[in-house]
Amino acid sequence: MPILIVALGVIILLFLIMKLKLNTFVSLVIVSVIVALCLGMDMTKIISTIETGIGGQLGHLALVFGFGAMLGKLVSDAGGGYRIATTLIDKFGRKHIQFAVVIASFIIGICLFFEVGVVLLIPIVYAIAKELKMPFLYLGIPMAAALNVTHAFLPPHPGPTAISVAYGANIGHVLLLGILVGIPTTIIAGPLFNKFAMKCFPGAYENSGNISALGERKVYKLEETPGFGISVLTSLFPVIFMGASTIYALLFPGDSKVKEIIAFIGSPGAAMLISLLLAVYTMGISRKIPMKEIGNTLTTSISQIAMMLLIIGGGGAFKQVLVDGGVGKYVATLFSNSSLSPLLIAWIIAALLRLCLGSATVAALTTAGLVAPMMAAGTVDPALMVLATGAGSVIACHVNDAGFWMIKEYFGLSMKQTFQTWTLLTTVLSVTGLGCVLLLGVII
Image (cartoon, rainbow, N blue to C red):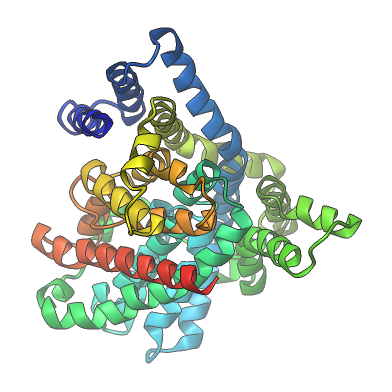
């Protein structure tokens, strides 16, 4: 059975990554070959299938992902993220401090990848918690929740961007619906979950944290950072361009020159390029930063995501093998008489793969290869399929994911406390996200 072959492939993948400590990209390519052979694919076509999967995935993704990394690095290195966080926290005051952290983390999380956002924000949150004499985790939970929500649902993050391509979804549409799903999900998995966790696991909130684990960090002087308004605007440029284009297309059907221009500006690649050029000016040139230094920032940003790009390419190869090997069609046939929503099926498969593999991006891409054929009937919005898959791909972060260890070390938690807080938080986030997606599916 194709499903058993995929399960065998997943087990081999786990063995290669976790037991043999083999590089994830190399492991994905090896497993793709093994699964292809087991599925009975023509041996002369296996490598070309893998090349097609990698090329097809990165061909659509490289512009958005690469420019997104550059934009985030420019904002981060200029101190724009620091300015956003400190300004919002100062304006909201002690009483509403959690919501200040949530809003700051959500804005910063749109242009920064999860790990980078955590490293940037934890020292700020630590300092604020110490000054206000609050538990470090009390502010850390909403921060981590907001960053993980943007990681799960919002382009240009790798998971939602990659599976938008796999499902043929409009990235601007995914972005708008992702924000609608992300806001209530962040509130529930952040401040509301915090109340529950403080009552049930008070010991976790007694830890003082361990920000020394972050190593050497850049120190910012507030007066030397960009202004709050321009920092927020620069971070949200891609959202504004892609969102405006999608809204215009919905409000004004038909063809016109204006619509053509707006569609071009709002296309993911163009939107990210324009946003990056604006960021080069707002975060660099206008602040008298030499172009050589700006260039070094852009180069560093790409070197930091090079392996992630390869891993996404490897996930694309595995997905393509599942598609060309007929596994996707088999799964579609398997669920053809099922009363379950395709959204729920996508979430379940992504959740199971996430629990096994650890990587949210690989879990999401593999899910896309399995369930994409189910969308042939056109009864479900591709953007909602992206969000349902994204929700499943972040469930129950545990020991096979780097994020688990980051949270454990930075917040000074024991293994048990990390499971009680972070693993449970990501589960609440995943289930809440699914609920919001299913609700949107009824409405639109």
